[in-house]
Amino acid sequence: MPNTLDKSYVQNGPWRDGVFQGKVVFVTGGAGTICRVQAEAMVLLGAKAAIIGRNVEKTKKAAAEIAELGDSADCVLGIGGVDVREVADMKRAVEQTVAAFGRIDYVIAGAAGNFLADMTNLSSRAFKTVLDIDLVGSYNTVKATLSELAKNKGAVLFVSATLHYTGTPLQAHVSAAKAGVDALSNVLAVELGPLGIRCNCIAPGLIGGTEGVDRLSGGLPVTDAVKKIPLQRPGLTKDIADGTVYLFSPAASYTTGTILVVDGGAWHLGNLM
Ligand code: HXC
Image 1 (cartoon, rainbow, N blue to C red):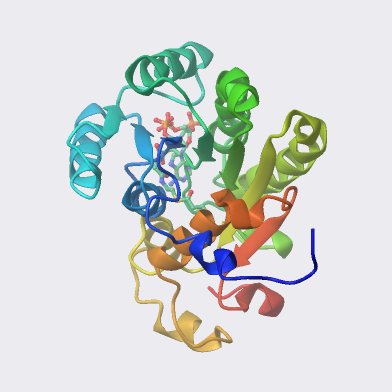
Image 2: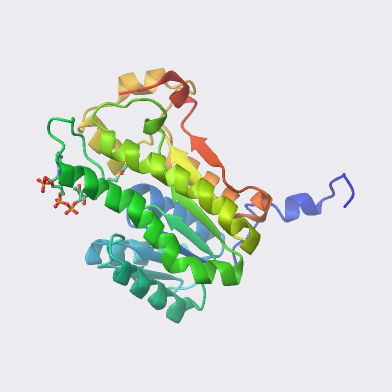
């Protein structure tokens, strides 16, 4: 390979029309704010998508709306009634996706649960519940899709966070879970790399208008927190979609085992809230 570029560099770039044509993305938490926009970006660039969620109606509605961005009404499948904690549910969701679309190339492990609770009010069951959804659910998601990923030399994107980089009060459960997600991603990048499977994390910071921020702020305005962000604005769901497209695209074909932090530089300061 010559160490120079030509015009094909742009023509083959991450945001070219149809870059994900013929590919299928499997998205847990895909009816939620952030993962939904990740799915929208993939569909706009040609992918078919399976939107996986616990709530049947919410999942079906999100899938139908995302499909309006794609090539055809059936380019997005909503699979509701699926709990990432349940191995049998995940197996069924994968079978339904493969039956509908024939394959799975990309996986977004985004399903998460969170609430504010200090150690006094955090029961053992509550702690375990969040570990089960965020960490064990991410493991179950990769486990269930592994044979498809291996067959298609696919890629996984875990949706992590930044709150475990420092000690974020009231977030012991999520911090422990997301630290585990980062570790899981790193190990799988090494283990699955030889199979041609890439594994990365995206770590959103304060992303405006999301359920996560609502929960962390207790529904209060985040104006003071935003003033502390080095880039002086809240993140947009589009910022996360952009990172997602890059990490799944051929432009990231040599990138695995990394964490893309998309937070306006905020984590360097510690807690914003
Ligand atoms: C203390 C709480 C609590 C709270 C629930 N629990 N809410 N404890 N404070 N606010 C406790 C319950 O009392 C119970 O413990 C245990 O948690 C399990 O609760 P269940 O309701 O039985 O669990 P379940 O129905 O499975 O619900 C899971 C959930 C819920 C996580 C608790 O909030 C949920 O389903 N969330 C999904 C949507 C969500 O959270 N989205 C946010 C994504 S944003 P006991 O001991 O009483 O039995 C996100 C961003 C993270 O995750 C990163 C941010 C930057």
